[in-house]
Image (tube, rainbow, N blue to C red):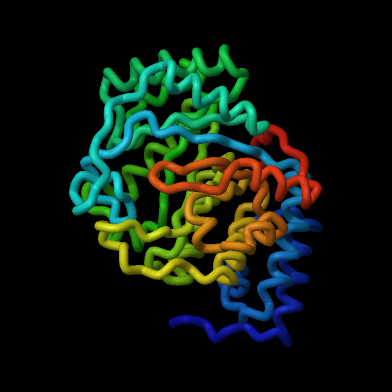
Amino acid sequence: MKAATVTSSNYRTMLRQAESALIDERRMLTAPELSRLADVEDDGVPALASLAHEVRLEWCGPTVEVEGILSVKTGGCPEDCHFCSQSARFEEAMPATPFLDADEVLAAARETVGTGASEFCIVLAVRGPDERMMTRILEMVPMVQEETGLNVAVSAGILDRDQAERFAAGGVHRYNHNLETARSFFPAIATTHTWDDRYRTCELVRETGMELCCGALLGMGESVEQRVELLLQLQSLDPTEVPLNFLNPRPGTPLMLRRPMRPLEAIRWIALFRLGLPGVILRYAGGREVTLRELQAIGMTAGINALIVGNYLTTLGRHPDEDLRMLEDLGMPVGALTGII
């Protein structure tokens, strides 16, 4: 049963308790604590965001990490993730494109350097890499590192232990594999693989010494309780980075008729992800432009401390200059980050 909405009369007490736990005691919030904070009325969201910003500064400092991403193998994915236009199973799916060559990848990495980024992520729309893909990726990683000095991350789906060990040995700095949503909600979002498949890949990333980038996609129809469930599952993985995505409904996908999350609701959950994961690199990712619109700067003062700049995998983002100007206006320095917890 859903708890009664928390009113402003006792919400201030809850915020003080959360502040004491996170800043004075320097401990993680528990499931009951997060659940109570999630049940605040809209007029309490600014106070929640203010606390999240204070926690971000206390645990992570003022620096913002900038990253560019590049899809080197787009479309034709055999999986049925209901939010994704790269799935070959849906109408209006993106057509499969050939693997980009090394010159195209290096050109994109050079452009990323120009934004002040420290991280560059090579992304493939696949269930998991075959041997040919492994070889191509492991050739590209050192080339990008040597040419640009960027840390190189990879997102190539589900891994086995041997693949994870090879990526770690080959210089992959950070591996991205998102849980996307809570275990209890995942069967409504994908059926061709399981939530446990994703979780095990995340464990392998940690076990083989790479930094783990493991994110969420909010607004797919999950409940408040399931968002808290996801937060606790992310806590258990102890990721270095958590990209926070908001559903941008894509034509032809099963979720195409869902409405984007309200801006104030997005701010609420940015703040709650920071309070639930105080030491992570919490990165603005896909859907922020359509969800937050003119409130993107508020998200930067509600717990966000990293950005993907430029375009995403299948949708357009803001011009990097707009994001860099926003950071300058907010007085937030750009630099490299690593995990705190």
